[in-house]
Length: 395
Image 1 (cartoon, rainbow, N blue to C red):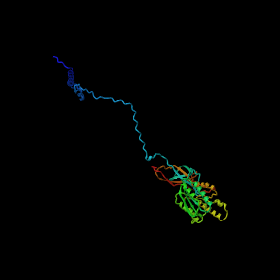
Image 2: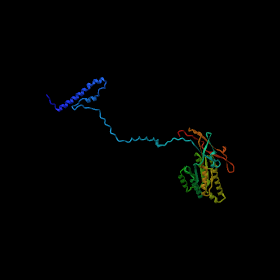
Image 3: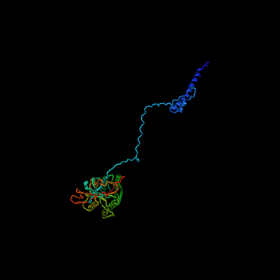
Image 4: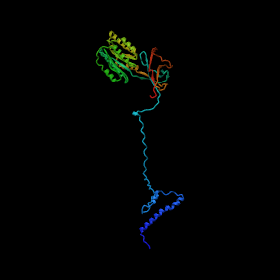
């Protein structure tokens, strides 16, 4: 008897048979696999894939799906790392390392003992420099201008308008000859000594002091007292000092005598006096005989003596036009110096003190001899520092 089977039922039976065959196949193949030394059983993931989970048949898993990364467009290479900023010194200071050869520069004054005038025309071969007793080779010698420290001592007395006019012209001429590094004090005298301005390099202060001399109070001229006081004041200042005395040379009521003034000047070193006499034209036009002429000659002689004793110069100009030339001679006498340069044989930077001695020699290496126009020998002095301190390694 034939039983009719529905198509749906037949499909389910067919699927069950396929599943049973799939389960039994591993069991039948297992002994042969072991006998042949086959590989180990499939991993659990594969076995699980062979187990039926539903009527729809086995769920086969072929492993994870690998999705290729989407190709990105070409990108530019990354920029380089920024350079490290340079290390700055504190306070943006700039430091450098350099090696230099030490050079010693000496300020040397060569002056005549008689009048303290500068000796020009010397060359490098005339200077013998000894450092710690060792002769040094002089590389260069040149003449330089040096600043001055001076007192402008002015006679400001109501004795004559011509004298005051000459004094003011001379003071203005001295003012115009000053340089920025000159230090000058302004003093006046009549019955007493007055300080108008202390030592300063401010030309405005000096100009104001000179321009303030408009109306004198006394007619007395105590020149000895004023000069003695001025020399005493400048004796307390180190270095060479200069006094520019501008006046008639007359003295009326000074407490200090001429002998005491001369003794004070002799006992005070490093002071040079330059004198400029006023009223020369008035005295030349006046009577040539009598007491007035004798007093005038005596006053001139005193001014000249102050200058000669200290190695200075004296001038008695008749006209204001002579003053520029007179102050030019003063500048030549007190400003000029030789700058002597050499490289020391001892180049060690040990901070030691090196003794220096400067000697003038002739072409044959003998001590230099000087003579005046008449062939008489002249004595001179070489003024220079006695040594210097060498550098340290860190300097």
